[in-house]
Image (spheres, rainbow, N blue to C red):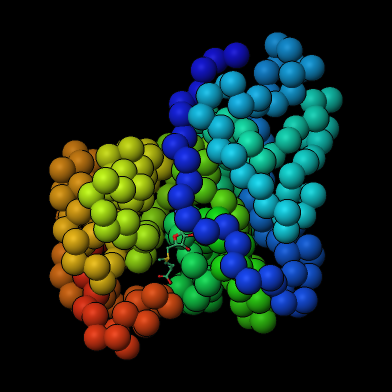
Length: 278
Ligand SMILES: C[S@@+](CC[C@H](N)C(=O)[O-])C[C@H]1O[C@@H](n2cnc3c(N)ncnc32)[C@H](O)[C@@H]1O
């Protein structure tokens, strides 16, 4: 089996308080319908191996007891049982996941939000743009459950959720398939020695550059000045991105995120960074 690229460990919380009954129930009933399942890599020369032992390199060790079994296993009807990428599995890097095929109606474009938190921004964007498909990644299960309540309450048809590390989803997407990516109020990891945990950095900018269409947009926001400076330096230095806005004014179609609202209420000033994929 070909050696797979290493995905670094994911830092951050997976679970908070126990889910309320209604939310736990949506994890069982709605998440299987709107969840994105990424087939783990199968060694077709040796089907008995089936999937992705950790030795395939860089597995993401993930244990999510709340996730429904339907997202953890499936059979694709080709005789090869497949496990899906929520448990330890090597990340795909083969563009096998067609994001346009995830939705009931083929969307006119697909956008991705990484680290959607409670999903307020994603739900509002999806409601405002019904012909666009939205994918959201969030490993914090309480946030996923909160987004599910909004999908249900607003009957949103155009959201699909990957309840896990965005890097795995990014590596499964084909080249140049997304119109827009949002990374909003990412964890700042303020200590210098934790800089490599910040989501925006060379490696993830390479991933984002690969999946964004030419002229596609990367939107970043934060109210932590040091993180703004870090993201600005990293993204300005990347050959695939050109800065189109850097300042305190949100884009006209902006929807404030929960962290943003908390920051503004506490007197912090947001910085918005908008980049175009060259
Ligand atoms: C500070 S919170 C901001 C949440 C939301 N964007 C907001 O503004 O309200 C950052 C979020 O990014 C998520 N996150 C961190 N690393 C991630 C990764 N590799 N893939 C997807 N989400 C990630 C965290 O779980 C957390 O919910």
